[in-house]
Length: 508
Image 1: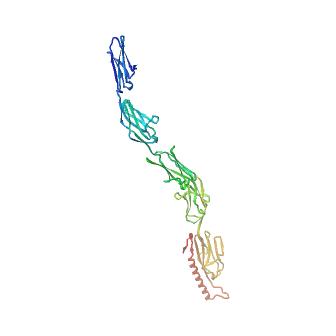
Image 2: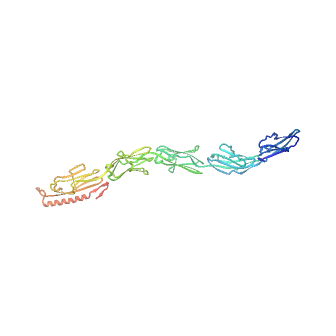
Image 3: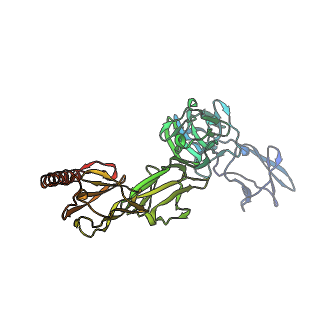
């Protein structure tokens, strides 16, 4: 039996010592660890063959020689074989991931151990560095064939032919399919590009069947209609997206590459940062007015990337940032001026905004701090003055405000001219009062912020001076009555004076 130990023995007798020689197929038989010849005392010569092989099959001759002659004996050795049997066949189908190892296995027995030939689509496979074949050792009956780094070209029907001297047989066919869900071999990287230039995103992918590639900007698919260029090189598996003439408003945000095939979906998202020099889209007003003591906010609206920083200036001197604010959502840069005063706040304001690309300066804003009208009476010291005919009467008032107020003097509602105006001091003087000077005098100061007034009542007493015509007692009574009526009208007129603070009309 193939693979088993066997013995061939012959016993010889004769006079004298015999010399025994073994031949195999008429050739001297070499002995070794597997082929051994032993002699016994009774003249028996034994040939032991360990683990019989097919090559051991043939005619064995034993020749015995002594001084009187030669004698030979022959034995023909035939080796029995067992036809191959497949104990574990190939599966009918196998799905392999691209790039991984594909392994096929058959368990087969027979005597002698069968040889195996692996086939793909009825073509014999030749083992190499990538196609590796293993055969059983010892009592193992497992035959394997492995293909390293499986590729789409390895798809097909695989089988094996198993044979020994006892016969041969064919294994089942196994249909091998190679697939792979999409994967990024080289991932996308975030890009920073200047406005007006071209942004390029490159990635390397894998997957089988070859994935469909979709590029998205801020979650919306990009198409060639939008001026982008999309490329895919099947030989290198490189995918590329080019966006020309980058614009901050149109293109800044997230770029996504999406891969899809029947075995899965994969996405990679990175940021596209557009570097744009600051642009002031809403400038400072050229002029701004504010009431003294109130607050005002100066602001500009700026577009740029990365987010610009701002430095405010007052009369060309930098302003500390405590009262500045940036609203990134609205792109607004603000300066808050609190409780404005002429001395500390009136002047020219400007802001400089800059980022790593460039800087820009706003138009200057001239801020004017307005002050309400202020009347300060210098003379007389009281609001009601009594004088005798011939005495001196004087009204002196200091008037201030910003803008400079207009100042009017009325007597009983009729305009009277000041006798002296020096800067902000207004004077009305009568060197020698007469009865007709008696009445209610009103000083009115007015600018765009407010209107202020003050009254001085003059009463004239004493004997009248007679002229040729004279003034009779009846005429004097009539004149006094008329003066009193005129005073009442003037007072009513003063009460109805209108104010215009901060350009809003208010009836008093």
